Image 1 (tube, rainbow, N blue to C red):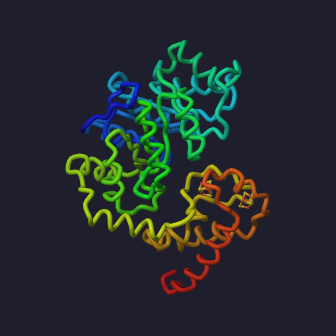
Image 2: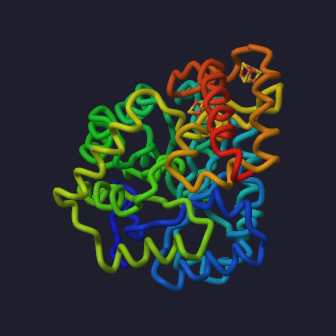
Length: 342
Ligand code: SF4
Ligand code: SF4
């Protein structure tokens, strides 16, 4: 497995790294097997978050004996120093380690004031002094905030969505990060499941050799696919470009990225899935979405109380309630048209 220098951190991380959000859905045993297989095949960088339920504990259980050989990053969504420090202490305990390589502020809606002694930034500096964390990072879905964070020169790494559907603005942010010698960690490499041909986005990302993708991996066959592509990289040729153009055309405009920042919803709507239903029905095997359980989930959209809290939290500026309504209408028509298969 090739290694990439993660900007000024100097950390040499695997060219395909491991995003540990999906392992929340696995048992400890299954997650352990997957993490260990990744490690045994040269993946040395694992990214998780305080908010990913038991993901940190699963990493700790599976990899604590090889701690010195791996690089760990996690995130805290705290908005004050005290909470941030308590999150870090918890992460250390969960991951069975006495240091975290990169601690990232998790998608803050406002960048903290580094001069404020009670800010999360002050907390990061204190944690660094205590030896709890080595480097300071930030994650964001907002292009403006990501750019501001890079220009502030206060962060060693930026984690930002990056895939074959990325806009010119996203690419500029990635390049700016590189110019500033920050590490660029690419999340959502498969656009939250909307890119169904992994080779297209893989070959696109590899045009930017400083970019470190953290693939969200839940199944062994997904891990195998990324390992195989690292071994025999797909070429970014005319056919790849054509497939990417096709995806871009189909996903043109403001599509839901499935990031989940709009949650929780008082009507208990599974917004990240419901707001992408039309696309999922056409881009993934649709039968799985026509089940009775999924039908009931989609009908919850009718209980929307139009509080608009989802809309105000969406980093992509989507009119989420409207998007949900359109998806429900489309879903009902699609389900009717495929009623013979129910
Ligand atoms: S506007 Fe509707 S969908 Fe959005 S959070 Fe409120 S109830 Fe949920
Ligand atoms: S509606 Fe916006 S915040 Fe919610 S999952 Fe989609 S992109 Fe993310």
